[in-house]
Length: 241
Image 1 (cartoon, one colour):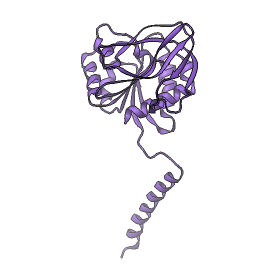
Image 2: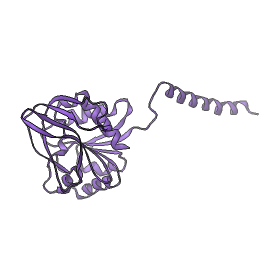
Image 3: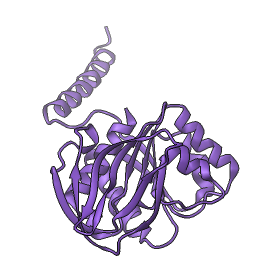
Image 4: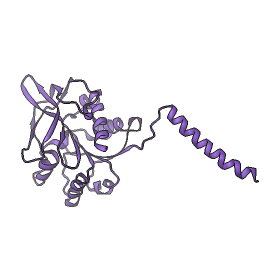
């Protein structure tokens, strides 16, 4: 018997086994990171700082996700096939018809979608199907930037670990549900002394896709808030299942 040829495979197997056991013992994650495609860009927000920077770091913490960020809508098609969750944070146009169809096909395939603050606006007059079907509504206005309360209205994995009520400085979006759309399940409402409650965190009742809407997210007061960071991590985890 060639002892050397016998020992080398044995020692290699023991090394692999030892590494795996060590990872389990230390509680290290063994699951593959969720592949997220985040689309940003447009006006009125610092997309590079708060989405490409802060939110990507939040999602990639502890290996939860592997995020590809783009502010060029023409690149969406090249990434979409390898994506678990599409995180739309843009208010710039997505003019290409094939890309629009691919986003709807992504939803029809039962994939996960997170619609962030800028993407909940009525941004595109030439693409009404987006707001009607994907968002089931949208916002055409908001309060002046300032303080308001966010109150949870339902228990859900997306809001797990969030305070029942918290306040922040942001734009209070006047989100209104389109009755012709699939409808939404409201998880949290935003209001202040001058404004009646509006949906702030919700699930779109799409028959196939898992879609989360998050109206918060104008600047640092949201993106650096622990509740917001927990929220977007929860949303990606839930949407990816």
